[in-house]
Image (cartoon, rainbow, N blue to C red; front, top):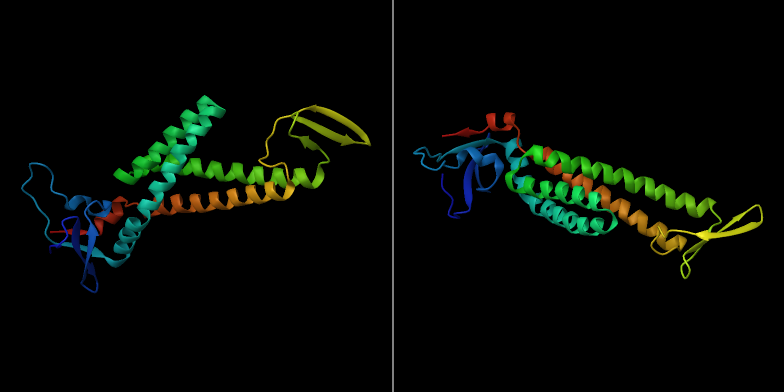
Length: 210
C-alpha cells in the first residue's frame, strides 16, 4: 500500500479493511521506517480500528501540545526574573515537554505532566486565597506608597506590603485568577490526553507490518 503523499504512510484498518493515510512521523508507525542500511521495507501495515483512532487523534493534538510547551518555555523567562532556580526548573521541564512531541517518549513527558498537575494545584490554592482574602479581609492596599492598611478592632495600622494581586480590585482579581485556573485545567487536560495517546508496547503488538 502506497500513498501519493510522500509525507504519509497508507495503512489498512481492520476489521473493515479501510485504507487511510497517517503521517510518517506518527509514532505508531515507527517500525515501518526503514533503518539506515537495512534492506527491509514494510509495504503493508494493518492496524486495528481502536489503535488507529488513537494514532489519528495523536496527530491532531500534537501541534496544540507543542504550542502549550512553547508558551511554558516563554513563561520560564518570566520565572527567571522571579527566581533563578524556579526559572531553570521551569525551562528544563517545559523543554522536555516539547521534546516529547518530537520523539514521543513517555519518559520525557512524565515530568512535564507532573509539572502541570502542580501548576493546577498551585492555581487552585491561589484562587481560594484571592477569594477568601477579599471576602474576609479588611486590608486596603495603597499602590502609590506600597503600604497595606489593616483594620482590626477599629484600630488602623499601616505597614509596607508586597503587591501579590494584579489589580487590587476584587472583581478584576477574582475574574483573573478564575480565568487562569480554567486555562490551567484546559492545559493539564490536553497534556494528560496527549500522554494517554502515546503508544505503548502493547499498541505495537497489535500492528502488523509486512
